[in-house]
Length: 140
Length: 259
Image (tube, one colour):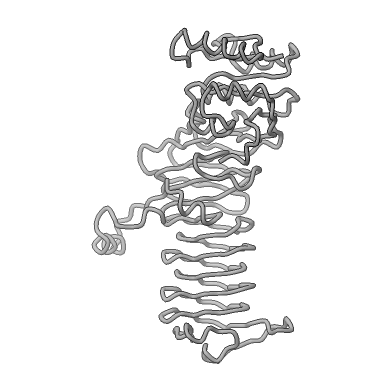
């Protein structure tokens, strides 16, 4: 058994694994398999290239390299990598969409006063807090 | 004061039996020695030791003997000592000793660590881990409190303490699974094999799953054997949990959270 990945994250959902239900209170989570249900973490959630998540994700930092069909709430940051695909609304403090990434949905960001600011129908690079160098993805 | 349950079959030879007894005598912690057998199993002997009023019950032997005595020691005031003989490396790590001699020396200081153990089918306890015996990849379903996990497993362990894995939460078991791709004759599967090659070039690390829970249930379409700390076997379906009560285990002084 490889120990390297076990040391870096608290919970790993491996490739070829199907999880149905709500995954919460499991620390930082690495998903490489398939999840149907809610993922909630006070820490980081990393959706790997081979992963498919059908359901909402709520975490401090969410990094997507696979597919997510559901609402994403990230209290700190959402990063969609070039292989990542997000179909669903997002509510994030900070957003990075890298070139090649796919995002279909509405995005909202809390402003400094804590209120939610909807940023629909705007190109990604016009949104506040968006990393303009990395937000050239296919934002619809 | 010391009550030793001694599995002499785990000694290399008769000389080692005397060697251990002499060592304990030299350390000033000699006591009553009893040998478990079919008529008087270790569990009965441990209960007898407690009944006789001994303050420290010590198992001398391998993992299965240690588990058997540990089951009796749950929630008891008496201290539980271990002198591992032909035991797994994990047991040595749990008590913080590298040899039986060091384990014997640690008994003298009576540094007590409140320790939880794993429980299978509300019957057997385990210090280390249970392994689902898989001669070939098999479909398994693991039921957690809030979710179900399904996979074709190549390796599956339910661990109280898994060798090399740092335990993050004493009240939870670690579930370690290595899964394989379910068999499929579909066009997608064939195409994928053509692309990545038969046998696959998939990163083996991706096949690894690690989860934590205070209780799980494992079931499978075909009945699978589960070995408990390399000893007794049970069959699926099986229920695993962590003891709410603790054992007063004697460990090495200044031993941090075991790995």
